[in-house]
Image (cartoon, rainbow, N blue to C red; front, side, top):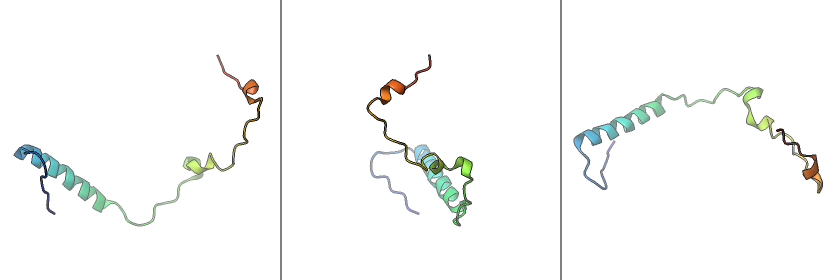
Length: 69
């Protein structure tokens, strides 16, 4: 892996910190399983909320709204 500083003049400490972050991210990516993910349960599936289209409000829908006080 090659890292090139394009702009600026980092100190050795700044460069070491940046390399540590890059290496940690690369290690985390390699350790993730690449197989298929387990299926979500129905409770946490966001598509269950939008499974049905909501009806469009009519011209008098504003009178049927309820604002709790």
